[in-house]
Length: 159
Image 1 (cartoon, one colour):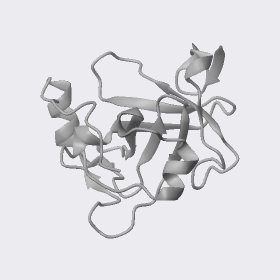
Image 2 (tube, helix red, strand yellow):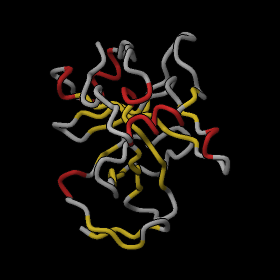
Image 3 (cartoon, one colour):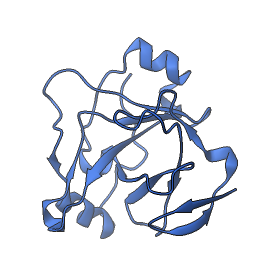
Image 4 (cartoon, helix red, strand yellow):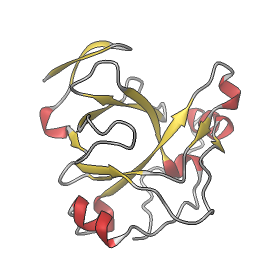
């Protein structure tokens, strides 16, 4: 399947890997299908590209690259909406904010994107409490991961 993107031109994606966000993402409710684009092998930053709107593309990162101790509980509603049967099927991404001064890059750990990798159902969930920040510093952790210091990729949260 080919999709048009503003940032990367036309790209080909595996149609079987398209993520479905029922009801969209907060602020982007009209967009329900996205693909994860990894343009550089080994780069922890990947792109959540809308398949129906070339201009909607968010930089995201595996939340555990930024915070190895990232743990949270998914609500019963989230588990049901995702059709989760096992924590091993869950993949967690966090949205990055990359300003002009790249060293001021932050990540939203308070609202992770959770994906059932077996069904490709996804949603962004808003965590309660104040444990995880909306603008957690990310630059140093991204640099560490680029240098091969990421030993936490694939770690799963508790549910």
